[in-house]
Image (tube, rainbow, N blue to C red):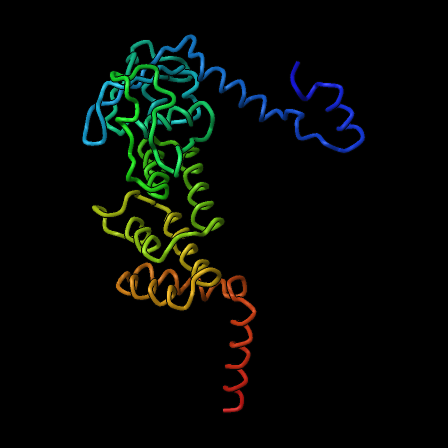
Length: 279
């Protein structure tokens, strides 16, 4: 019997308002997806990693082509024509991406999200159905910080024409950079380089500039709410030559002053207005 169906839990629900254990439709669907991902019964398509500098090749993920529908348009176009399975579609596809990155893409296809390992790193393969070595950690990207992982996942969303993956990566970046806010000035500068740099430096295409908006907001909120005066000066010094970033930050501060300004900022603005009137 499921725990939520016990007499005790039903009594708590009736008298204490405790309904945390009652499954929602989303929870039920997620549990179904987990079961399908775990058992892999009826898989008809295989993703295979090609060896490169990020790890050994030959890692395989058996997937259900039907689960790709509505996820990656790039994969879907190769597997389906006019809404039906393409009879000449290949049984596998070889992709030259890091195995631990591909592992998270497969996880997202089924679960609608992806997870990082301890310390916000990509250390292990969790969803692969065949690994040509007993040591799965050989594929780890131990030196890639979590913000760069999320940017890589956003890039995969762009490459695979997978808007939902981009949305998940963006949400995780927002949580990291704006909600939790524990980034030193040097990391903000790195994010500026990765989103504002030239094509050879930046990670994602970011056609609509959403990642740039996020980094600008992260810099503003860290500076206004978290940094000491010394850290603010450090960030200003580090980014003083990033013309586009500085222009966007200035524009954001001006356009959204009423949202951004802290009480002391408003008091100072009022004092300046009074001085101008007296002058």
